[in-house]
Image 1 (cartoon, protein in one colour):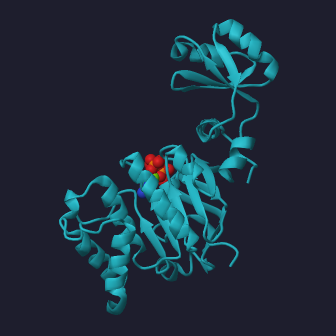
Image 2 (cartoon, protein in one colour):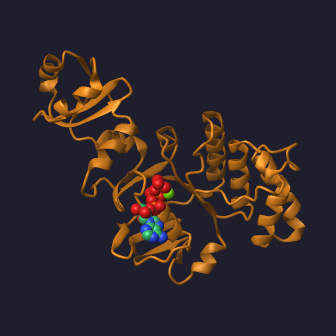
Image 3 (spheres, protein in one colour):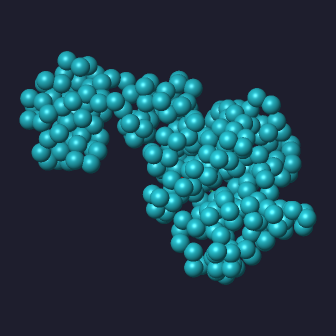
Length: 306
Ligand SMILES: Nc1ncnc2c1ncn2[C@@H]1O[C@H](COP(=O)(O)OP(=O)(O)OP(=O)(O)O)[C@@H](O)[C@H]1O
Ligand SMILES: [Mg+2]
């Protein structure tokens, strides 16, 4: 099996509205693959189709070598899904949630205890087995939800914004766990709005208004997406100047980054002119994934950097 997931022109329409349009991607086994894109871009819809929870309107896909349309039930038995809203039972304890999911997935009683212990260890929940889930902090809840979704030893795990609302320390720990899973051959699909997490994916794809804009490694995208020279401009009252600067003929894009402006110039020779006009100081910088994200969000047509 070359690919854990391979889609061809996968499309989802809700009435007249196209939420996912002609998405073709390939994901290798053991890869950590990030789905990125603005709110409403179609990430969750795509994940739900790949999990067999939502029927595609057109297109096709193979998941673990199986046909998504014809072998949906067999696929469901081999994957784990952690939804954007954790499906944990607040009024059950940690161990009761894990037991509940073990029975849903039909884990044989012989191995159930070992599996639950393995998840407790993975989630660093030892000593909290009998705590009510409602009393756990977000970071612990998140790891418990992960435990519940991988207790059946899936080959692919879909994590839809698993780290929203948790602290940077917990987010880091979560990604370390994800990396361990991938090292053991599990394919991880993860959606995130955090660029540091996107950096830690082997590959990422950007989706915008349902269309696939680009898919490649973070390094490749940083090198190839931006067309022009990226400069960081330090100037007073940057916020108020943004529209005026963006209107200049030699500028392709202008975005605010903290106290600075990130500007894409068509040519290096315009740096002097820009400094003169704004009274600021400009230096050429290497694009970050955030710059890539903003550029792709504004792009109307699908990219060719696949
Ligand atoms: N069942 C549905 N019926 C109609 N429209 C829907 C349905 N589900 C999703 N949509 C629409 O499809 C688009 C894509 O939604 P989706 O939830 O996939 O986006 P997303 O990329 O996951 O966004 P977010 O980052 O906010 O989670 C949105 O405009 C959403 O309103
Ligand atoms: Mg979503």
